[in-house]
Amino acid sequence: MDGNVSWCKLIWLSQNIPKHTFVFWKAVQNRLTTQDKVRQWGSYDLMICPLCYNDMDSHSHLFFKCKYAGQFWGKVLVNIEINCGNMEWNEIVNEFARKFNGNSIGSVIRRLSLAASVYLIWQERNNKLFRGKQRGWEELYKMFHETIRMRLMNLKVKPICKVQQAWDAKMKVVTNGTVADSNVK
Ligand SMILES: [Zn+2]
Image 1 (cartoon, protein in one colour):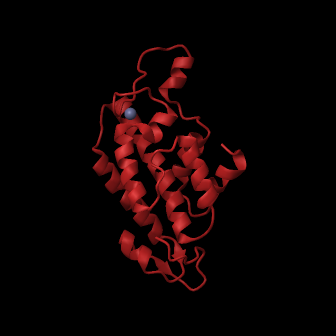
Image 2 (cartoon, rainbow, N blue to C red):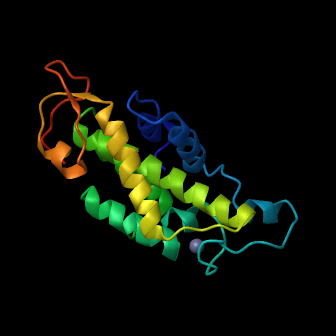
């Protein structure tokens, strides 16, 4: 990690979804209560990832080495046209902080997508762990897409067509939009 400054850029932006930002903020600092932490506190049961049962429940596993999370994340990456599928969690955060910290619509969508992905995976992990419920990753992806689409429809943007079509989102187009038109999906 390059230090707080880099990932802070991903957190404190007006376009973010607050509940996503909160979970993402904790995830960036490795402060979500994953079971590798519980183990450090002295409990040795329930250490396996509840989404795939293949590895220990930890930040680096959940985001996004986990087979379940990885399938979901892989589809997100295709949609936002990024290739960082093999990166470790802290490398992913650094990559996003370095490349997508501006106000272009492409950067905004990518930041929203990363935070939404973390939020949804964490929520799914908790649902499975505490309620025994788990949706298919495809279903989770549909929820992701709808979440981003709804957020985009509430952003004021300069005239752009590509993003609106790509996300099937009718956006508020204004000449002095807070999000600049980058023509990047
Ligand atoms: Zn897993």
